Amino acid sequence: MTAPVADDPVAQAKAAIEYCYEQGWTDGLPVIPATQADVDACLATVGRDPGEIIGAQPHLGRSITVAQAAANAVMAGCKAEYFPVVLAAWEAVNTERASRGAWQSTSGPAPLLVVNGPVRDRLGINYSGGVLGPGFRANATIARAIGLMVRNGFGIHPQELEQATQGLPGRWSICIGEDEAASPWEPLSVVGGVAAGTDAVSAMLTRTYEYVDNRSTDSAEAVLHDFADSLARIGAYVGGPHSSGGLVLGPEHAQLLGGAGYSRADVQQWLFEHAVVDRSDMAAAGKGEHAAPDPGDPGLPFAMLPAAADIPVIVAGAANAAMSMVFRPFGWAPWSGRSVAVRYPGS
Amino acid sequence: MFDSIIDPTKGPAASAQAGGPTLAARPASLAGLRVGLLLNTKRNAEPFVAEVGRLLADQFGVQVTVARQKPNIVETAPQEMFDDLRTGSDVVVTGVGDCGSCSASAVADALKFEAAGIPAAAIVSDAFIVTADAMASLRGAVGYRYATTPHPVANLTEDGVQARAAQVVPAIVELLLAPALAVSA
Image (cartoon, rainbow over all chains, first blue to last red; front, side, top):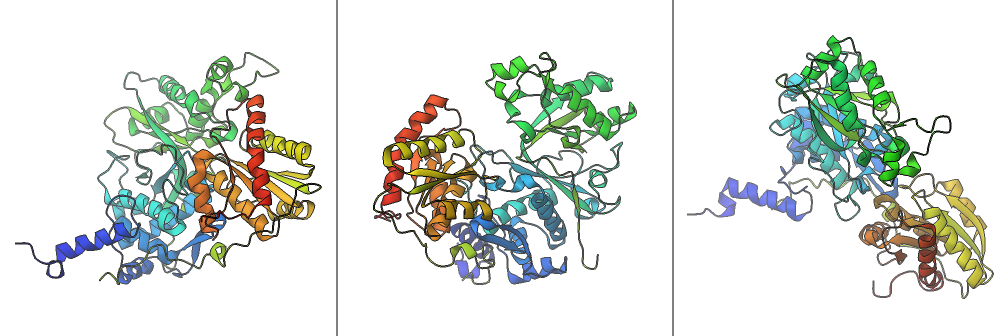
């Protein structure tokens, strides 16, 4: 026999979740209803003013506070101890000039959040096998919190103020750790200006992810050539500084490149120089106006990436196969390259 | 029953929602009026709006006195640009809202001019009606009217832009002369 809702805690929980759906507070998946006690538990992990405004959309007349962020983090499924990382991720996303207007854009970009530092192991943030996939609470819920903050804090809903043409899978679920031990290079956050060993989050807005599976060679240049081919895809090109490309290198590829003497900056430079297409191919795709012949040398190929420094290179994944992921930063502004240190009470 | 659940949408008071919409009084005729053009950086927006201005001058005796291009498609025009248009024109045409952000933004710009006493007509492509209406609603102006043109605009040829501009001119004239809220709203 079914117990009445009033007596059955499971039925009550389901009714509370349903209530949240009815209010329009969810991204389509169930949320954890947030209480003041939950919010207070989050706030205790950061020691910041609950009323502090941490983001605004002046053209929409909306802004969001630390306390609202906490409520949305709880709803996303975050544990209270994730909250410092959520705030750093939010700051990192908002640091990117590309995020201005991104939530309304037809391109529908997804934040890519990259976590460095000891916090990865402390919270169980995955940086190894299946790093871009599901299965890890911290990865899944920290990324989701950002999406709920945009939805509930800024009031930007799909098919209303959000006008994504197609969007992309995982729009609010891409949070990865960097595998610092498997990387031959300094952590991404160190390049981004945060001291080694300090917890930090870097963010980019991205439009797509495409694998490069190359287990066929031990040549660093051959693997780089393979990456450059995917990075030079014409369809991704939308003009000027708006189209970059980046890599989530699997540890095998990273170690192959590192072992051949390539620094991260060398990899970026190589890719910048080799991710090129013939200008005639741009014209054939109807994008000739972006790639007029170079007056000095009409035969010169066209560089598809704006600058070496605009090519993010991150190391994550399992060391069990030589594959990597090319991704596409979105933006009407270049990647800042900056990382944001996670702030804790007293830090 | 669920009073203990925190409302995650509740934040600081939204300044843009304060008060109802203030819409500009309409002139009896466009003849002799100064027209300001506010355009965005989307492909074809500049020639489209410029052609609208030219047709208004040819057909209705207005003078295009100020034309400014917004540096940012997301936000409303910077204050200095807004002031140039406000002081240098009697009515304003803004557009073309043919993307997710700039469609809402074109309506937001138009409403700012309305609040300053300048009748405004925003041009938005018909793929973005929902988001343009959402912005009007956000600004307390449910039913605020604007002119629409078929989407897309970005891939039109020069001739295509001119034809579209000609098509939208009657709607713009009507918007600048008639009450700015839809009667049925």
